[in-house]
Image (tube, rainbow, N blue to C red):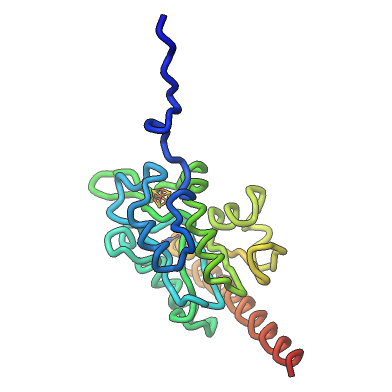
Length: 230
Ligand code: URA
Ligand code: SF4
């Protein structure tokens, strides 16, 4: 019998992590460009384009969502659809300028399934989240934010551990090697799904309060450092 061909030869091995696409001595620009052609999981096949993070090179605050939605997929920018518009209003209410924030997602391609003529958001799988993780890690490494806010359970569990419970631990600072101030809160799209206007208002206020808590902790930290340096 002829020897069986290895199914894991270099030629046929499937790439399962974006790690090997990260350019040497990465910058935000080269990383973003490299991510445009990422094929490390299957999500690119049904998506329009890679939706990479966006924001200032040394933004002090980073927001991490789950994955681009329908509009983000079409436009190519994170948080520009209905959830993004709600996020913008909440940031403003919390006194945070979105232009100074780096906004990104755990997964960079839109995961969806058809329902009639609609493309319905489908939660990314663990292996897709793992495959995409190197992009987020390099974003964190390059931006080096003081504060990171995880928006929703997918981001919180990806960054803070699979046991993380947003319902119980939201709004509290979590010790993490990722940044000095790390906190998780709900995803803005959960506010859009609130069952009634009263719940929506209450939950939106809690969401704004979480963002405000981060903003306050960041400015306190900045002034403490200034005092130390003085
Ligand atoms: N939801 C997310 O998690 N990210 C986006 O960019 C848009 C909607
Ligand atoms: Fe690559 Fe992430 Fe897109 Fe998968 S979702 S193809 S890992 S960029």
